[in-house]
Image (cartoon, rainbow, N blue to C red; front, top):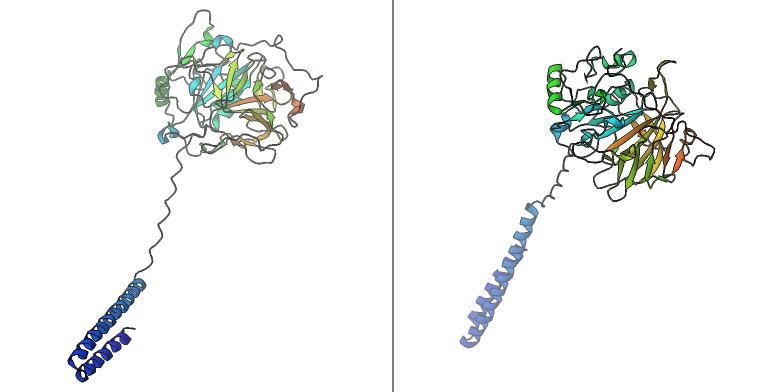
Length: 437
């Protein structure tokens, strides 16, 4: 293109010269002006062609711009395995406490309940039950308790959280074996063969209240006891599992509406399983929480007055027996669930579904599955776990009684079904202060 433009320019110059030489002065001047205009136009065309060539060459030589790299996803923040909520990483490393709370009427109110993340209730002897709270954030508590004795099945429930266990004695005959294992860290208020108290506990007497309901501790005393005992403060490798529940994502709620057989569950009455304490919960649609009651009264923290409230509830059916034929003490097969007696219910967001559960080892988490064999998605928040006897205990959901035969079908019990104990028959049994006999 550039060569052609130069040739045209040269030819125009030659022609211009010839015309000028042959013409007169007037016609020559006009011809010269026309020729100049022609040369100017030709020169501009040539310049334009040159610019186009240079622009094209520049475009060829310059590489196409690279696409902007996509931003890397934000790293997932550390979350509590107990609640699924975001938690400070340093706090997450801290081993939780597993606190044995009595629920005798005289023992109320209790302290530290507002810090409990997962709460268990299991039957003891004499139609009386007991509760255990797992709390991750326990620093700064001025009072924890009151604190009572422990049973072996509470230890097995506690171990999956790799905690430090706070208790005040227990029956040595069958609890001592697990509590004296080297991997089990416990602070025992009674002292003796099941572990020392390390100076952690003190009494706060109250008028008219039996002495066994007056043992307390606090975070400062617990810290001192941990130091004296030489317990590890952070989770131990090989004992701690970061995942327990499969939690719903931020901003999402598992409504259970995807299950065709889900039933409404707003009022939960566990009196058929715990006839003395008559534990119950009622649902608040505004905040999606179930509020806990005991003896017909709100179960509240003694320091803050805050009522216990839970997002998730599991009713877990478990095989059981008496330790011996003539013993009042019970034994639940939590660490070795029996096939066919490993089911229960999951309740959240005003609904209930049937589930099965599995716990493979002492420190392994308990995993809950729906009837499709898929792990249940649990909503973020606190969890209440009721362990009930597979062939004995019943409960009521929205006024419908559920008996052992109904556990697999979620149906209304027949009219001739009857509970195993009435409130009038239920008599709490007080164990001795020092159970190490």
